[in-house]
Length: 451
Picture 1 (cartoon, rainbow, N blue to C red):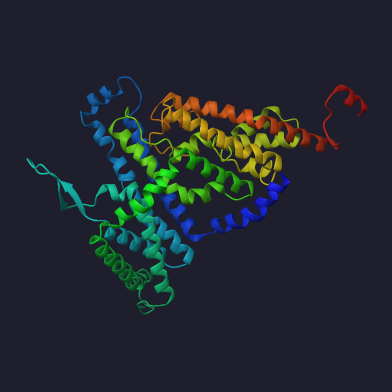
Picture 2 (picture 1 turned 180 degrees about the horizontal axis):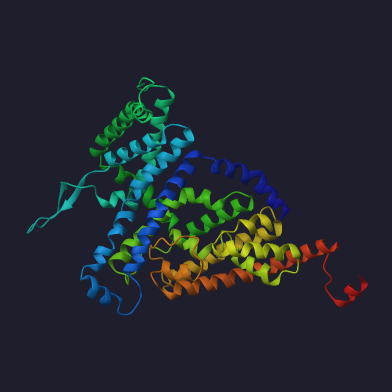
């Protein structure tokens, strides 16, 4: 095991550290986080629309009319269906901040570039027509929602790179010092913004004469579908969880690093479930793997499912150090925050505890996937339940009001406890022995008498 730790320190940590500091991945992560409050707000209305209470629909229809559900779900469309727009602005804004150029202008230019790359044509069927025709109209909702995430992120990075290079080369319009700063900044962004939009415009014109026709089609074909197929599979989920745990084992924030790459995929899969659930709460949902799958069923108590470890310390620890840590870690653990355990126990670089820390999430991933894929447990409905929501409550809400989601969380908790406990007991004996100033804890009465 010590050799394994050495390999992690020598080969994994340097690479993972560079990935964690990569500004583009950080910008993507932070840009997606910008959309999360909106998704949670939209999810609240989605929950209210489909409360699993007998007679609820009839009650709401009597009080608010037959179209009450359609009107209640207006905020869902105003949050989920603009996901790509928010991410486009957010990624560019955060990336520009890292380059120390005007982030607000970069975000606005990125948003304009994304809309320029999006075809303003939608299918239209007139009365009596047999086939749909494409007509110019509003912005297609499908491309400004989750389906447009990859295009939004790519164009945000491209537009910000062009913008910052022109700014850094000082190819800008400068106004006299007496001009208000806001006006001056807008003119500074004029030439970079023109360059960005010209590049995207020319690229769109070229794509329109190819079989791809648009940025969205080419990204969907070459990037979105393959990554979604991998990220939505059991194999892809196990690989992602393994990477998260290995990175945490070296002291790096594995969830943030892996989430920067896989987050857009899981978010898109989540929204696919949300759209199906919104049309019919009883329909078969297409995806098991979503962002909520990991947040709410795998990482119970945080990465590594360490809530079980916190409770074991609180109730069974003989070492004063672990008893104190258990009291300290239980409250954050309930809300899925595990840094007190990860760094306080510690699990990081701990040859003994790294074993269950990696093993538990992998086992929970397999158990949860099989249970949901087999229909024993309801799949995540696409409701964006905050990752800090305690178990049982979160499982019920995230499955659209299905008790099976809560039951699976309880089962996963006890599986984690069963795997962690032998390793915790060994670590607890070692710590108790250190506190007593001995090499080991007495194992029987005769040994105790000799001491």
